Image (tube, rainbow, N blue to C red; front, side, top):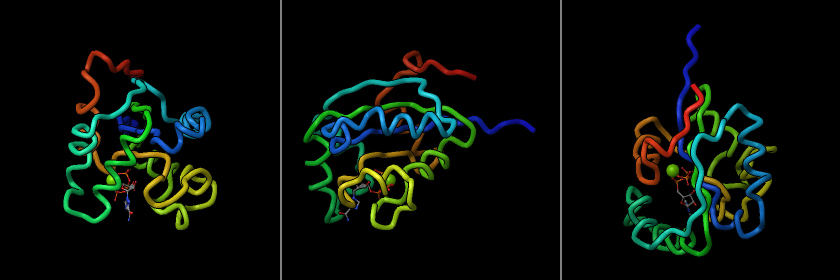
Length: 144
Ligand code: RTP
Ligand code: MG
């Protein structure tokens, strides 16, 4: 069988960086078959945060989401592995930590629906858009 190797885009969000959970979160991702192929730490500008979450513009959680995402540095990464997009979402758990499965990143670390510690792309189209938002192709060190 040919493996379905994909790339996905991950953010370790401000609440997690502030609590020094970068290593804990990365360990969960890496130990589930997701390899880091690009990584950087940065503080989003308001414009970058608004653009990244443009699909949510107009929703009541959009403004507080943007404020939260610029409140501290984040770690942005490209992860590569078999079925990486779904695997990353599975390891993260659903958006609301109160509803996330036990043992997931959000169940174990998130503070609230908004301050939910991690982001992962939700489709191949989102992954391609989000990777290109932060990385050029020559910054990605593919393993496959
Ligand atoms: P993400 O895009 O960050 O991976 O999260 P997601 O797909 O699970 O959730 P999405 O619906 O795309 O929402 C994006 C982020 O907005 C914040 N949020 N706050 N009701 C609320 O207060 C609310 N709903 C969503 C979260 O930070 C969520 O991850
Ligand atoms: Mg989303």
